[in-house]
Image 1 (tube, one colour):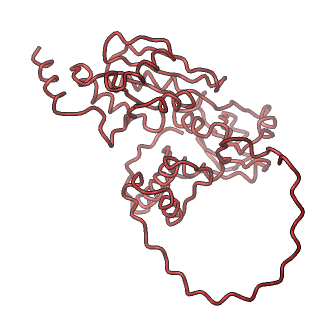
Image 2: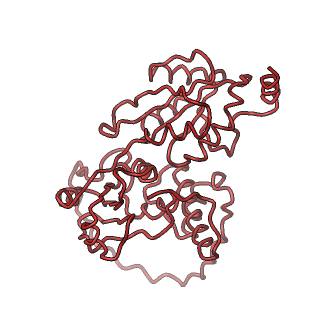
Length: 346
């Protein structure tokens, strides 16, 4: 019992999943909506402060979140502080919290992305290794399998194509996560046909990743040569992805015919020469979440990035973080030191 009493004492001195944690803290109904719309796999811990077993789980859950960062959404909700949200989760996904910590997994249906997520109870060991091993095989796979026979049909589909040549039978966790993030903005495919890769690059080995813009020939594809991390690949792929669609299709026809152009006006006198505009001072990007949207846009431009499809602040923060990580990774590569982001299998 001594270890349990010690854990209870620790609870009184420390909080769960504070700012800076890799675990996503859930607070409101907006979080429930985000879960429903997400294409990622979610694992959610339902806990309460004052629970010794919950406190004992915390470091292992943190390790799980760090190991699967950007790949799986690792989240937690306090059932006492956020009773309404905890109740809505139980009602929506059909489960009951009989004790804490309770851990559930919400798995999207890759074949039917709009369908409600499948709820899976996690009753395994409460260790990072066990939870990570349980989650990786459950990650939704939005990629297609192609070979020489099916390639033409795949290539004629809309959107830019991401094709991964690999000896593996299925997509890796890294590619599954990227296909989830860029769902409906890029098409992903995995191929084992070694003869096909010669159409893209005669000297390419396995594994290899190529991007083909919509309507382009295989000879016009772009091969990726960077680090096999989520952040690096994300930064590479964002330039090829279709913009995010919000509130209607870009192909919606106008409701009425445009009015005729107004008659030409007389040319105005030439403007007086303007003083040369001073260069904007560099923006402090040590904490992107504290910047305004205007500052985030400017910071992206200063660091050679952009976020054409971004509309919300969190999207600009994520884009800037990705750009900064890629820049740091390139600097580390040139200096011979390794970056902090773990490399993964392609």
